[in-house]
Length: 157
Image (cartoon, rainbow, N blue to C red; front, side, top):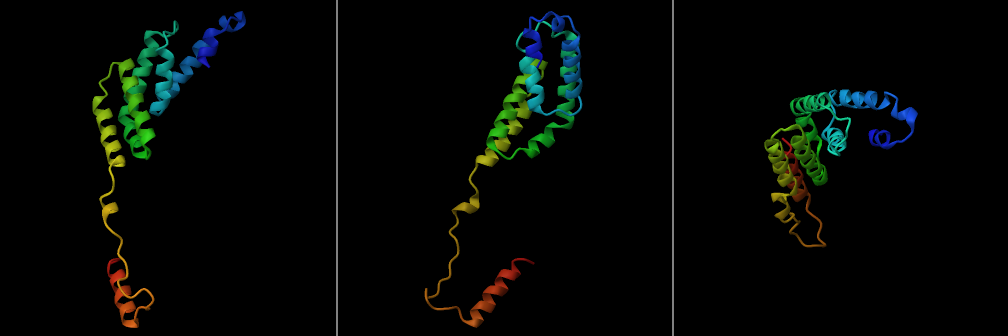
């Protein structure tokens, strides 16, 4: 939306205060618990050499990022269950950190550790499934059924 307003040649819009109000509202909203993708979108906008991006805007962005790291980062990381989500989050933090002057390597490393956990094969996957070892057409005896059921329920205790 801000890019559209920036690129307009329509005088009533250029002379209005809409751009400043909208940008201020977006920056204020970032401080209310925005996620990394929301902050990244603003960073991409500001990184496009926007003539209306000033020191006050940068301060608000920095404060929003600090709030995110302290209050939302862990929750967002915990909510990620897909490799692509984690990759996007790591990329976003690196970009935001560069724009805000923060070293995000500790956070990115934590995300990469989580990525390796998700992509690591389960150790249980290599074990063969247990099978009934009796004759294929012979039913289990009543006594064997009782033993098997008892064994299954013992594992639930």
